[in-house]
Image (tube, rainbow, N blue to C red):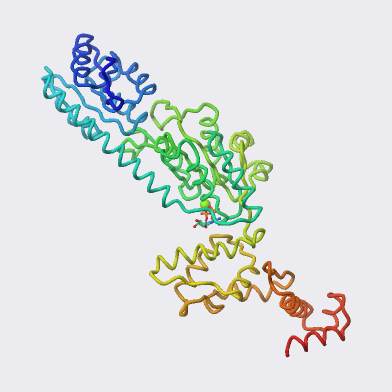
Length: 454
Ligand SMILES: Nc1ncnc2c1ncn2[C@@H]1O[C@H](COP(=O)(O)OP(=O)(O)OP(=O)(O)O)[C@@H](O)[C@H]1O
Ligand SMILES: [Mg+2]
């Protein structure tokens, strides 16, 4: 490389099996202020592309061994955003057109004309930098729109601490937890705080994809690899290159796919169906609401895979174990859904929050989010009311007599009143049973009830 380069010089990689061509192209582009890398084979070109940042590749189409077309596909796996310009000899224009269909930026015919080739490579470099800038703006936008994790309970804070500690490493993370507890949100947070934040976050829901096509979906396939494979397709492992692959509902993987995934985790490589081995440059975050350890015990989940995935385990706590987060979450979702519905900001009065804090939330935060979205749509005033809550929550209260939840700061006489009322209901309305349960005399309970009524 020459010395008089500006800091932001673009790198062009010249690939040709003719040493004389390589030498003259190097001179041309160095004079134009490019950094120049050269290779006399596709294999060497791939090595260089792995080690250096390359913006444009100028490659001969016909080379012994790997053709320019195959090289382009391999290069795009390494750097999806680099641009490729093909050099074609007379009579191979058909193939060059095919190359453009496959994603080449342009082609130039041999014998090369200096002006043409410089102009084409310059344009390719401009396009590359536009696309790269576009991608980086998108990723900034993503981090702005990234939903925050709301909550200040100790249970949630512990989990966030582990997530933030684990994020910068490349270690595989297994996120456990009931449905709706925020497993995907945690996975996205781990990605956003990792060195791969600018790379893609690719989510695969293993239970939503039919088993028969999951392997092709994950690893990709070559054209003609099986009946119906009319096109070559990249799998999710390739799409997540440089970023994070989120394997959701991992407990649903079939034994066959479990074996394949284990291999990727062990070797750091994968094979598209009918294709060549590729390196797997992804960070894996997996999630499940199943008890994976139990699945291992009963033989439905491979033990070796479990240990590979379980390098760092994070369990998202159920909402009912951190009810103190409910008011914050309610406020957060009110903000989101009032804005979405174009209405002024609603608030949730104490009695509504009490009711929400008493509920068991089997569907966790997702259920709460749905309840608030619904309430925002239904609400007629400027405050939520109990009428805006679904029957499931109002009715559930009738069966749920063994627990009352009180918010910190609730006045004592109100706590007493609610405790009395709930205990009485639990006792089926029998005042002497209720009094026994509360450790007070029947006379006292009568008096307190009378006070409460006045
Ligand atoms: N702590 C939180 N703060 C704010 N929003 C949250 C929080 N936890 C979850 N959510 C929201 O609740 C919804 C459900 O979360 P998410 O999809 O991450 O849960 P999950 O555990 O992956 O659920 P499932 O097991 O059903 O796939 C999402 O809309 C998410 O943004
Ligand atoms: Mg999920």
